Length: 249
Image 1: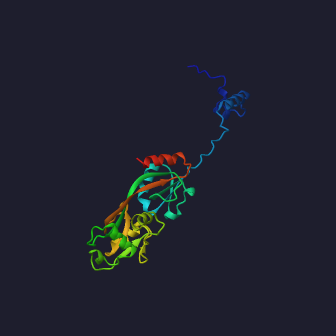
Image 2 (image 1 turned 90 degrees about the vertical axis):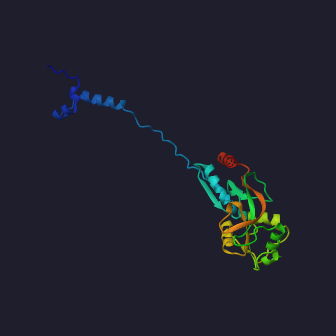
Image 3 (image 1 turned 45 degrees about the horizontal axis):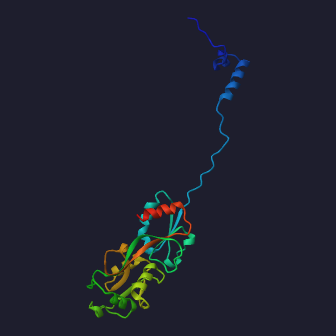
């Protein structure tokens, strides 16, 4: 059988190995082939800007509402910072969550829920209900012994929050009015400490919200139901509006 070959078969690597002189047509073919190869792109993709975290401030009493916020935020990065109510600064955040409406509110606010403000006692306290007048007497120091309101013969211990906290502000306005809190009251830093203190002391009385109910305490009076507010700056970005719409459902 007769074998035929390409006119440029001598350009094969085998031919080059057998013949030290590489024919000129082969160089020409290699040069043409090099121009037919795809060239790397000279343009580069601009770097993607890192996602901007959503800055959130919230009061200790509003902590239970963070679960809804994270759920509504989805893949957004949330930078949440707990702050005492008096140190909330909407100008340095994009959203502030608190219980109740502040007196000096000037920024847009959206109600995302409501909270019951409760007066609580230890579960071993035989008194299961109290009137608003009795509660006022307990927290103002006018009543110093449970026996004065048909309870056990034992001195009571009052627990409150700092005067700037949202729960305390609502309680003072609704129950105490112009009466000051007794100077013998002990101070809880947050609702968790309040619940633990009342659960540990048989003769204690304190203030809590409905979401912070815990074992060892029972509520004896619902003071009021207060709105849970999400406060934003005057201008908010679209991501904040989406989260707010989700939390209001």
